[in-house]
Length: 177
Image (tube, rainbow, N blue to C red; front, side, top):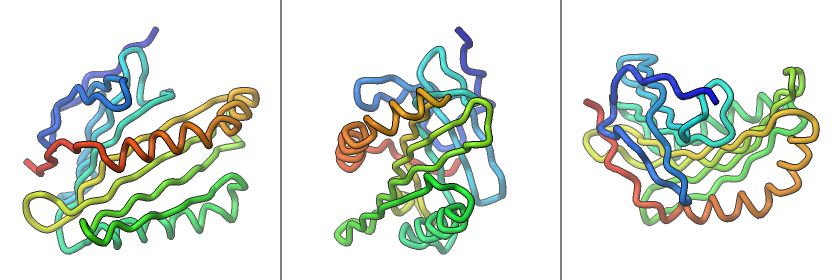
């Protein structure tokens, strides 16, 4: 079984492991695509970020952006993707009391070999320190025709449980170092 690659370093003060829905996720990959944008991906032992079935993501963007604006940018991307991805779909929930936004969506790559179906739930929240947005997300994938059919068939139950857990999950403090 492959083991996850070691991350370069923890950029957000969340070294892991992170326990979510009874599964432990270890920090496997970090990136800083720009001066203000930081990404970290966590997978269970034995999985890789290149071919995972379960992943947790932690991201932060510094600057004058709100959770609603960050979610709207992702929704725009999903709307554009829908033109070429017959599976693409999303739902969005706003929590006006906290300023948080929960976006849940499914996408596919039907041209991949094997095909891939991916479901994600993104919880956007104000960054704890300074201006910006923090993201805590869950991602699930299935590969191949049979795996995709089974995944989509069980998605209703899996999705509901994960969204409920994500909505009340005690997010670790995410800070830009």
